[in-house]
Structure formats: C-alpha cells, structure tokens
Figure 1: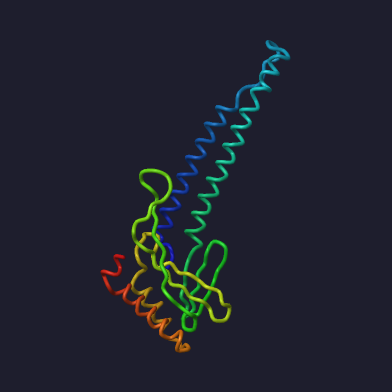
Figure 2: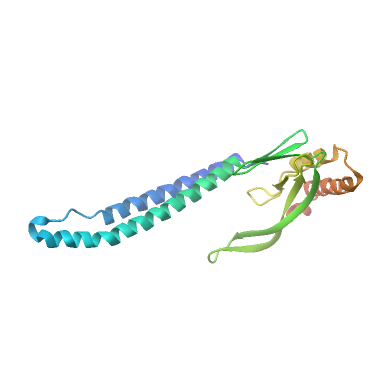
Length: 207
C-alpha cells in the first residue's frame, strides 16, 4: 500500500532534474542581474546616481525570482516528502495510514467501515488545470470506535490502478474477522465483499 521503489526513484530523479534546471536558471539570472561596480572616475556623482536608480528594478526582479524559487523548491520538497512518507500498513487488523501531517489508525475488526469514491482528475494536456477522466477513485473509510476519528485509504496506487489483489483481500479479511452490532455488521460484510470483488473481478479492476 506504499509507493514502489520504482515510483520513488522516478519521483526523486524528476525532483533532482527540476532542482538542477532551477539552479541553472538562478545562475544565469545572477550573471545577468549582477552588473558591475559604478565608475566614479568618469561619471562622478551622476554615475553613482544612475547606478542607484537602476538598482531598484534589478532588486525587484531578484525578489520576485527568489519568491518563485522558494515556491518551486517547496513544491518539489512536498512531492518528495509525500512520496516517501505517505504509506499504509496493515498490522493484524489495525490499519495505519501515514500522511504528510500525521498518522491515523483504526482497527478494521471493530471500526465502522464503508467504501466511498471521488472523481478522478488528471493534468490537462492542452493547458493549465485538471480535467476529469470519467472514472471514480474508490476509498476505504474506517471510523475508529474508540477515538471516533476517520481514516481514508485510497484504493488506487500512484500508477492509477487498483491495489494488488492480495492487499485488497487482506483488508477484507481484517474486516470480516471481528464482531459488530447488527447495524454495523451488515455494512462491514458488504464492504468486505466489495473489496474481494475489486481484488478478483478483472472487469471491476478496470474501473
């Protein structure tokens, strides 16, 4: 339920290339905006004033470029951190989902569980923003009975395909292993059945 080694390597290479390009642009910008010291011998006070008045736009460009660079580096850092930190582990019947800002747990044997979904979006190949693909991304939602906190596990991996069958079956087995009040038991059974269908039905795995 975690990013594969290949996915981590790919994201790392993309991040390093991006930072290398950004560093090259920063070097070129520094050379262009660096300028030279004012020549007081030929221009006197006038030369000094010309240099000082030309310094403001240069400084503004440097500040703007610096802000853009910080945002870009933050974006790459968030992408790398998300790839390496985000993970989900099933230990016995306890599902642990780690995100950027923290970790949540729920015992699937006793938690209220159900399947939810959301529209899938991809980057617009013809412009900015994202466009819907027409598919829906399924999530397993579990509400821990002790803490009342909900966790969501995306059932699609980074390659936009369903989790492997053995992982979906393991989630279903953890859900079926517990006992619940009748009102929750039926919903849990339906959730486990749907997980097994997603694992074993080739047509369902295409959704």
